Image (tube, rainbow, N blue to C red):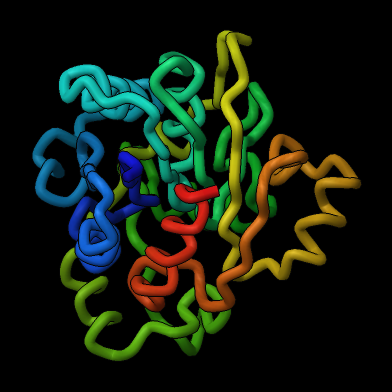
Length: 242
């Protein structure tokens, strides 16, 4: 069966993929959930030098050290950026890169650049002179779209286990070498596919690079590995079998 490497989005570690990992392994797949440098159980490594390239190297080294090939590299949200760079560095080892609530940002674009100016200003005020991006409050009343599908125990888990994110993961721009392109797929939860297709046609930077790849819709909030883990595993299994 397929070999998966699962890269979490901001503030989360490999723990967030636990139920997806169990489901995929029960379907016969090899699964490697990972924690990036400076987050979760590796938050003691969260120095100001931790960058988007650091996280890219985390992914590449896991793939190389474990000698993984024909990998389905899954990047959730902000994890899509280091996943995109890693696929560019070792394209011969990647069968497909799967963006979950993410997309292949254009070269020279940082995650921070995609936020509205007022949100950038708010975050910069919260960060101050530090090097860590604090996690959200996980308040469904304030963020009902992104937190849709998360029950109170899961929200409590997020409040307990989410850790600040190294800031440069959000502010460093994506850079690719221009090597062999890797096939893509998308799992969209907060964007209907009709909107995604329209954005691809309009060459929106979120989704332009997904043209030609399979698109899958899993209606829930922004964290489907926690709100709909079995359904997400089923979609990933479907992509693996395509």
